Each structure stands twice: as C-alpha cells, then as structure tokens.
Image 1 (cartoon, rainbow, N blue to C red):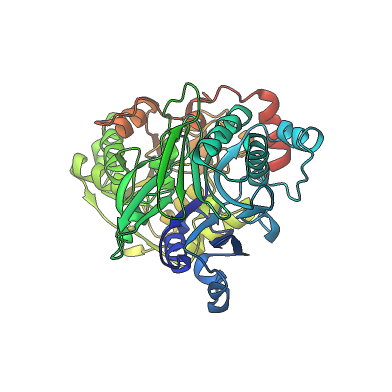
Image 2 (spheres, one colour; image 1 turned 30 degrees about the vertical axis):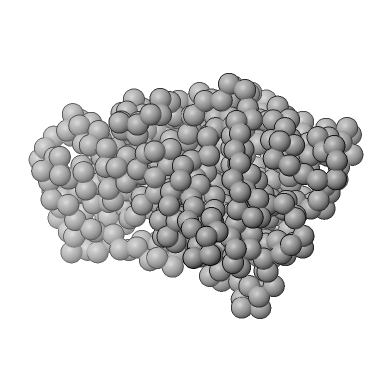
Amino acid sequence: MCGIVGIVSDNPVNQSVYDSLALLQHRGQDSTGIATIDGSTMHMFKARGQVREAYRTRDMRTLLGNAGLGHVRYTTQGEAEIEEEAQPFFVNSPYGIVLVHNGNLTNTVKLRDELRNRDRRHLNTSSDTEVLLNILANSLDENVKGPELDPETIFASVRMLHKRLEGSYAVVSLISGYGLLAFRDPFGIRPLTIGKRETDAGFTEWVVASESLVMENQGYEVYRDVAPGEAVFISITGEFFAEQCADNSVLVPCSFEYVYLARPDSTMNGISVYDARLRLGDRLADTIAKYTPRGDIDVIMPIPDSSRPAALEVARKLGIEYREGFYKNRYVGRTFIMPGQASRKRSVKQKLNAMPSEFKGKNILIVDDSIVRGTTSREIVEMARAAGANKVTFTSAAPPVRYPHVYGINMPSAKELIAHNRKIPEIRDVLSSDNLIYQEVEDLKSAILEDSNVTDLDMSCFDGRYVTGTVTPEYLAWVEATQSS
C-alpha cells in the first residue's frame, strides 16, 4: 500500500503535489518523493520519513515545472531503511521517464531475469517499481517508430506491458517533454481516481491520485476512476486521452481498502468508504447479538480511528452505550504499517492510552477494523484490563486474516498471521480476551458491495482466493523467505 498522485497544470505544481501527499500520508510513512518536469528537464527529490518532515523550502524550490507526481511509501518490496528504494524511479531512455507505483508485482523474479538477459537493462535496487519502470521503458522502445511520441504508441506500449506483468499495480508516470501517463492493472486491485478543474486562463488541470479526497480537498471535480486495464495519457497542454489496454479486464478491488487502508472521506470505485464501514458495523452487530448474551456488554468502544464508523453502527443497532475509552496520540504512525514486528509492538502504547474512568468495573466490547498479527489487539486487551475493565469482548469488523496478502499489503508470511491455522477460540486465548467475535466473510462482501456496480472483491487474505490466478505455492514460499519482517 502506497499513495500516489500526478498533476498536469498551467502553473507550478510542486506545492499541489506536496499538499496531495500530505493528504495521502496514511497510505505510507516510510519515505516520500516528488518529481516534476519543466519543459524536457526532470527534477526529483526523495527522502525517508513523512511528508512534513522530508521537504524543506530549498528542496521545493528545485521542483520546477507544471507537471509533477509524488509518492508516499509503505514498504512491501525492497528495504524500508534504504533511501535509494524510495520512489519515484527514473530512467533516461527513451525520452526520460519517471514513475511511481502502488501495488505489488508477483512475477518479479521472472521479470528481473528477462530484463537482464533479454532486454539488457540494469536494475540498481530490489524494488519492483524499478522493474515496472524498465518494462514500460522497454515497451516504449519497441513501439516507437519515429522521432515523436503519440498517444497511440503509448497505449500500444501499455498493452505490451500488461502482457508481461502479473499482480497489482496502479501507476503514474511522467514522460519528459510529453506529459503524464497513468494506468491500472486488469483487475483494478489498487485504486486510481481522476479529477479535473478549469483555471481562470481556460486551461484544464488534471489530477490522478490513489484516493478521491485529494480532488475534493483541493477543489477538483471527481471525474471518474481509471478503469481496470485502462491507460490515461494527459499531454503537457492538458489534452486528455484514454484507452482500454488489457484483454478481459474485470474490476475486483481490494477489500482491505474499505476495511482499513483508505480514509473514510474517500470514494473508491463508486463506493463510499465511510458508508461501507457503517454497513460493516451493521452486519457485525447481528453476529455479536447472535453469539453474545446481552448482559455481557455495558459499553461499546472503537479503536480509533478507522474502526469508529463500524463501532458507532454496532452501538446504534444493539442499543448499547457508545464511549471513547482510548485516546490516540496522533503523532505516532499507524501500527499496522510499521516496518517490523518489534516496531509495531513498541508503538502500541505510544499510540493509544486507556482512560480508566471509562473502563473501571464495566463489561467492554471493543471494535477494531481488523486483526492481522494480533500484536496491537493483545496489547489493547491488556490495557483495558489494566484500566479496570471487568470483562473484555474483542470484535473485528473484518473476518479472520488467514492467508498472506500479495497485492501490496505487508502480510507476506502466513506464520505471522494470528488467525493462520487457528480456530477462533484459540485466537481468543492468545489475545487473552473473554470473548472474540469476527465478521463473517460473506457479510464483509455484501456490506462493501451493497448498492454498487462492483460485483466482486479481492478477499484473498480472508479466503485464500488470489484473483489474478497466478499466485503459486512456490511464490508464496519465496515471499515468506525473502520478505518476512
């Protein structure tokens, strides 16, 4: 999971890209980068850390030009501690291309071998984004016939790229002297949304970003999503071109975006994230009522922030008092996307504090958005007991996470997942809660898809069904061996 943005304007875009990345900070905290084009000259700056810490005034002044892109990184491939692994990535031929990517390629081993032995391209990092960039550059090399680059040639190159890549990818790139290219994998697993607005001078500005909140916050009209398998090209003069570049594309977005990753004020694939989380709470309330005696719950509490809509709906539907018992330190990053298990465990008590007045002598039902490794959940149960809770029931608005997620979320190892090869009573005992209730898989699906045109979701971490059809046991073993934290 990362956050990406690209902007084409008739004015300098460095501040707009920066502001967009600040809005997308929840999608990645390891590193950040911005690139711009000024005529045919590329400018780029990237650094470790969060957006507001990484850029200084002197850095921003170097980012000249009316077209730009940016990235906030959460590591799924490559090393979090190595600055060279940060995005964007640049290649100088053909034309000069700079690229950012959200997702995860699942055939990188094969692609690296092809790039080295067949395409004669050199890679400097372990990042799959550098692989993707070189595949794009090689495809353009093979399709360009004359001195100039046109949309037809660009789309032919993306068609060629789709035939080589496997996995999930939402991409924004800049081609020096020409404009912005964005595309999405044939399943639309990772999100990508388009916005536009008219300037006083009559120029149509365009923005492409991971979440619609970027458009809404900065005064753009939400135009539409990039379709699965589609490529969009926006020239430096603001002309918009789009073409479907993949065979048999079908929209199967990642369910975890709606559970946890996206901000609630975003809309993805026509589905409001906030409304989806309310519906998750509605479904979860029915399951709680089925398995929990009514007198066992005095108050309902969320783990702030992403579980708050679900907890509100659980409390409303069950007619039980809703209380905020945990105070969140907003200056500590999201524990789920901390790069290592030790960092995640250490940060829990820095991130949350339990207020004893809300716990003492009460039977508490805690609502969290999901339980992945169980590190945070176990610490929270201990905090509730230490604050004086009489009984602790822990609930998850998502089903048990039993399988690795390979499409851009850091769940590479089945053995790290608390629900892997465990029944719910066994998980309850590990968490030390009095009761444990999970969302049902079909309830998750129906809650997210209700009243939408989307018909399916990637729920591979819950049901083990990998929608691309190319994830093998050998690949999962390789991922676990090379990327477990």
